[in-house]
Length: 161
Image 1 (cartoon, rainbow, N blue to C red):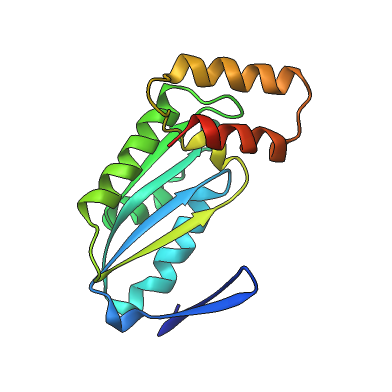
Image 2 (cartoon, rainbow, N blue to C red):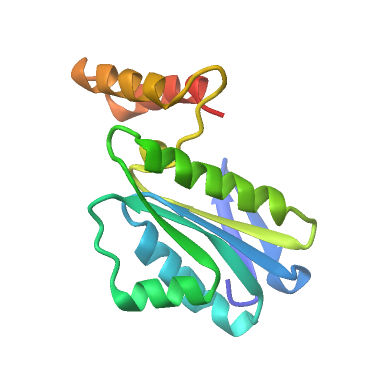
Protein backbone atom coordinates (compact mmCIF):
# COMPACT_ATOMS: atom_id res chain seq x y z
CA UNK A 1 0.00 0.00 0.00
CA UNK A 2 2.96 2.35 -0.04
CA UNK A 3 1.94 4.34 -3.10
CA UNK A 4 -0.54 1.94 -4.59
CA UNK A 5 -2.36 -1.20 -3.65
CA UNK A 6 -2.31 -4.32 -5.77
CA UNK A 7 -5.00 -6.81 -4.95
CA UNK A 8 -5.61 -10.16 -6.55
CA UNK A 9 -9.00 -11.73 -6.81
CA UNK A 10 -11.08 -13.63 -9.31
CA UNK A 11 -7.96 -14.18 -11.44
CA UNK A 12 -7.41 -10.44 -11.90
CA UNK A 13 -5.17 -7.84 -10.30
CA UNK A 14 -6.62 -4.51 -9.22
CA UNK A 15 -4.42 -1.50 -8.54
CA UNK A 16 -5.37 1.55 -6.51
CA UNK A 17 -3.26 4.70 -6.40
CA UNK A 18 -3.50 5.84 -2.79
CA UNK A 19 -2.83 9.45 -3.78
CA UNK A 20 -6.18 9.47 -5.60
CA UNK A 21 -8.03 9.16 -2.28
CA UNK A 22 -8.52 11.70 0.50
CA UNK A 23 -9.69 9.26 3.16
CA UNK A 24 -9.36 5.61 4.10
CA UNK A 25 -12.10 3.66 5.84
CA UNK A 26 -10.72 0.54 7.45
CA UNK A 27 -13.01 -2.40 8.10
CA UNK A 28 -11.21 -5.26 9.84
CA UNK A 29 -13.28 -8.29 10.84
CA UNK A 30 -12.35 -11.72 12.16
CA UNK A 31 -10.25 -13.54 14.71
CA UNK A 32 -7.17 -11.62 13.50
CA UNK A 33 -8.99 -8.28 13.15
CA UNK A 34 -6.99 -6.27 15.67
CA UNK A 35 -3.49 -7.28 14.49
CA UNK A 36 -4.56 -6.83 10.85
CA UNK A 37 -5.96 -3.35 11.53
CA UNK A 38 -2.89 -2.33 13.52
CA UNK A 39 -0.56 -3.47 10.74
CA UNK A 40 -2.64 -1.73 8.07
CA UNK A 41 -2.53 1.54 9.99
CA UNK A 42 1.26 1.28 10.27
CA UNK A 43 1.50 0.80 6.50
CA UNK A 44 -0.92 3.68 5.84
CA UNK A 45 0.73 6.13 8.26
CA UNK A 46 3.31 7.56 5.79
CA UNK A 47 0.49 8.34 3.33
CA UNK A 48 -1.00 10.84 5.81
CA UNK A 49 -4.59 9.99 4.88
CA UNK A 50 -7.52 10.66 7.17
CA UNK A 51 -8.55 7.28 8.54
CA UNK A 52 -11.53 5.91 10.39
CA UNK A 53 -13.13 2.55 10.65
CA UNK A 54 -14.39 -0.39 12.60
CA UNK A 55 -12.54 -3.41 13.90
CA UNK A 56 -14.69 -6.38 14.99
CA UNK A 57 -12.83 -9.11 16.86
CA UNK A 58 -13.74 -12.24 18.75
CA UNK A 59 -15.07 -11.72 22.29
CA UNK A 60 -12.11 -13.43 23.94
CA UNK A 61 -9.46 -11.35 22.15
CA UNK A 62 -7.48 -9.33 24.69
CA UNK A 63 -6.82 -5.91 23.16
CA UNK A 64 -3.48 -4.55 24.38
CA UNK A 65 -3.19 -0.95 25.52
CA UNK A 66 -0.89 -0.27 22.56
CA UNK A 67 -3.40 -1.73 20.07
CA UNK A 68 -6.29 0.20 21.61
CA UNK A 69 -4.31 3.45 21.54
CA UNK A 70 -3.16 2.94 17.95
CA UNK A 71 -6.63 2.13 16.64
CA UNK A 72 -8.52 4.81 18.56
CA UNK A 73 -5.96 7.49 17.61
CA UNK A 74 -6.77 6.76 13.98
CA UNK A 75 -10.54 6.83 14.47
CA UNK A 76 -10.99 3.05 14.40
CA UNK A 77 -13.62 1.70 16.81
CA UNK A 78 -13.00 -1.70 18.40
CA UNK A 79 -15.95 -4.04 18.87
CA UNK A 80 -15.73 -7.47 20.49
CA UNK A 81 -18.46 -9.88 19.41
CA UNK A 82 -19.73 -13.44 19.73
CA UNK A 83 -18.22 -16.38 17.90
CA UNK A 84 -19.17 -18.89 16.54
CA UNK A 85 -22.76 -17.90 17.30
CA UNK A 86 -23.46 -14.19 16.64
CA UNK A 87 -24.77 -12.11 19.53
CA UNK A 88 -26.02 -8.56 20.15
CA UNK A 89 -22.42 -7.31 19.99
CA UNK A 90 -22.12 -8.85 16.50
CA UNK A 91 -25.17 -6.85 15.39
CA UNK A 92 -23.82 -3.68 17.05
CA UNK A 93 -20.46 -4.12 15.30
CA UNK A 94 -22.16 -4.76 11.98
CA UNK A 95 -24.35 -1.68 12.42
CA UNK A 96 -21.31 0.45 13.29
CA UNK A 97 -19.48 -0.77 10.20
CA UNK A 98 -22.43 -0.17 7.88
CA UNK A 99 -22.99 3.27 9.42
CA UNK A 100 -19.42 4.46 8.89
CA UNK A 101 -19.35 3.03 5.37
CA UNK A 102 -22.51 4.94 4.52
CA UNK A 103 -21.37 8.16 6.21
CA UNK A 104 -17.96 8.20 4.53
CA UNK A 105 -19.05 6.93 1.11
CA UNK A 106 -17.40 8.98 -1.59
CA UNK A 107 -15.42 8.54 -4.78
CA UNK A 108 -12.46 9.97 -2.84
CA UNK A 109 -12.65 7.38 -0.04
CA UNK A 110 -10.77 4.09 -0.22
CA UNK A 111 -12.40 1.27 1.73
CA UNK A 112 -9.86 -1.24 2.94
CA UNK A 113 -11.62 -4.45 4.03
CA UNK A 114 -9.51 -6.94 5.96
CA UNK A 115 -11.21 -10.26 6.65
CA UNK A 116 -10.02 -13.29 8.56
CA UNK A 117 -11.66 -16.42 9.93
CA UNK A 118 -14.75 -15.92 12.06
CA UNK A 119 -15.95 -12.82 10.27
CA UNK A 120 -19.33 -14.22 9.31
CA UNK A 121 -20.35 -14.53 12.98
CA UNK A 122 -18.65 -11.35 14.15
CA UNK A 123 -20.17 -9.01 11.52
CA UNK A 124 -23.88 -9.56 11.68
CA UNK A 125 -26.70 -7.67 9.95
CA UNK A 126 -30.01 -9.60 9.95
CA UNK A 127 -32.12 -9.28 6.82
CA UNK A 128 -35.55 -7.92 7.84
CA UNK A 129 -37.89 -9.25 9.09
CA UNK A 130 -35.34 -11.53 10.77
CA UNK A 131 -33.74 -10.53 14.04
CA UNK A 132 -30.78 -11.55 16.13
CA UNK A 133 -32.68 -14.38 17.83
CA UNK A 134 -33.40 -15.92 14.43
CA UNK A 135 -29.72 -15.78 13.47
CA UNK A 136 -28.59 -17.17 16.84
CA UNK A 137 -30.97 -20.12 16.51
CA UNK A 138 -29.96 -20.75 12.91
CA UNK A 139 -26.24 -20.67 13.72
CA UNK A 140 -26.68 -22.98 16.71
CA UNK A 141 -28.71 -25.41 14.55
CA UNK A 142 -26.14 -25.37 11.76
CA UNK A 143 -23.31 -26.05 14.20
CA UNK A 144 -25.26 -28.80 16.00
CA UNK A 145 -25.89 -30.46 12.64
CA UNK A 146 -22.13 -30.56 12.03
CA UNK A 147 -22.24 -28.31 8.98
CA UNK A 148 -18.95 -27.03 7.57
CA UNK A 149 -18.30 -23.27 7.67
CA UNK A 150 -18.59 -22.96 3.89
CA UNK A 151 -22.05 -24.55 4.05
CA UNK A 152 -23.07 -22.32 6.96
CA UNK A 153 -21.92 -19.20 5.11
CA UNK A 154 -24.05 -20.07 2.07
CA UNK A 155 -27.09 -19.99 4.36
CA UNK A 156 -25.93 -16.93 6.32
CA UNK A 157 -25.74 -14.94 3.09
CA UNK A 158 -29.46 -15.58 2.62
CA UNK A 159 -30.29 -14.51 6.19
CA UNK A 160 -28.22 -11.33 6.39
CA UNK A 161 -27.83 -8.07 4.49
